[in-house]
Amino acid sequence: MLKSRQPWAACLLCTMLVAVIPAGAQKSEQPQKAGDASTAANADTARRQGSNDPNYVIGPQDMLDVSIWKEPDLSRSVPVRPDGKISLPLLNDVQASGLTPIQLAAQLTTSLNKYLTNPQVTVIVTQINSQRVFILGEVGRAGAYALLPGMTVLQALSNAGGFTAFANSKKIYVLRQENGKDQKYFFNYKEVIGGRQPGQNIELRAGDTIVVP
Image (cartoon, rainbow, N blue to C red; front, side, top):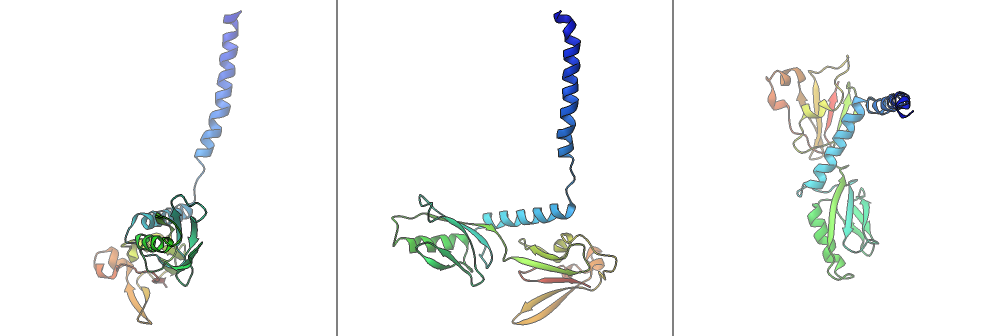
């Protein structure tokens, strides 16, 4: 009797495997939109750059994680306000913009010495929102993009989903505010790609706007 049941059990097991495997495979094969993937990767890279770079200068709208050892009630995630300050318990408003995370941690430690014994403060930039460039005009995905260290015009354009059919890639320009005035830096895509005008592929600064007419 035991031998006569084996084929039936094997058939049932095969049926169960056939039913289960496609469900898992279907989940892993769901496509991800290219634009969403590019934006997520760009944002994730920016977060890691901000967290790992000791020389990063905090700016307005950045998100900070302020951790005070053994003081969970005082530790928290805070945004940097447009005026460059953050709000913390005991200290109220504290200037954060213009400082590195290490400098801000040292300043908070000094201020907290009045209230705590040997405070140990850690500051981590969890989101970079102040360091951005903007891409406008005839591109696939116009908008604001995180400015990564050393990012050039060509690298920024690669995040924007390519040009539309109406784009004039020979007359792209970077709009930058310097000394209160708008300056234009022209960028001819075809010449830069062809290696004839590499100097036009300038390194971007926070607040730059790339216009693709």
